[in-house]
Length: 492
Image (cartoon, rainbow, N blue to C red):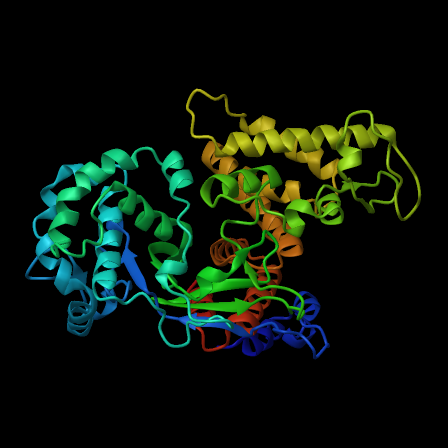
């Protein structure tokens, strides 16, 4: 069933949904101009990995080669390599293909590796699997990109990737111990005396740095939760810079990564993707990007005064219009801003909004801490916090949206009240859509399921149609993401 059929079914039930062609959110994405460098739905890159690796914790459930789960309905199961008993495959075809392309050089090294308990800690096994793949490629002198993996200037190679070795080691001091654990295995793979691929610790750090800074996560779209199952290096897409307000996104089909445009891109504008979740506090995003990727983000979401002011907007106490709060408003003793609609000012409401923003930020930071000694707010505290915030802040306030997301998780944990948590998640999805201009598969799926259980069919059908039409427009009607969305929601 496609979205048009869904709309007709909803109308048969007496639900008046807008036609997909009249979707206001999508219409905003699709501008009538014709001189864009890229338009919504265009493909910037579509390529296979230079190297890829299944996560160690997915070895029992997913295919080592295609990264998919065996089809339980067809009574398939993981078949182990008879040589190492380590790598597992969903089919004979995958096993043969992997042997020819990747597994043969590493098979003897991986034999009996599960018995080494040192590999269970600190991600050592994942590092080893990645390094063995990189070393195989470099021994074959396959540094370049595959056909179609080119930038406009020239093909990218592994040598082009930045490693930030010193910063990477400062960030991950445990790698010194990891090197000692992995060195015997790396030496077994590095047998050529005249041309060692990983002869020492600096090279170990350089190779790992290139991978960790430039890799793309790979997802299982067949799983309703859309779980990450591995990582890979894609030489073409690795050139793309980050933005917390991205204009493109990564779409996976097995190991194939496609970069799709999610809003029209002017010729003077660069294609940018999000390296991390863009739906987080500005200070959290900037800090993580500096520590993980070693750069300071200057995208509109982090540096543009107008964008930041809109994201911090309060609600006018007189007419409920959004009042942007810029950096000058967020300082103590600043002048009370006037409403752009009614020109009224309210100092008390302004101070309440500033206090609410500060408390929301503290709550969001607290929610992400795993420290058991940190006092966590009670469910009543969270309810009071969110109630005040909804009263004084604009309904599309970005910080409020992130707090809605975290409140959903915290309240579900504390009270087990599904309805309360899902209302917060629904609000978070709506606010994210306004600022990031996208939809996340998993939370939307959970919301649709919950709305259907609550017999709020009009809202459920509307969200199914809007999210589905977004996926159809951006990634294509024949894409696995679109088909997975339609298939999963109709299995409810």
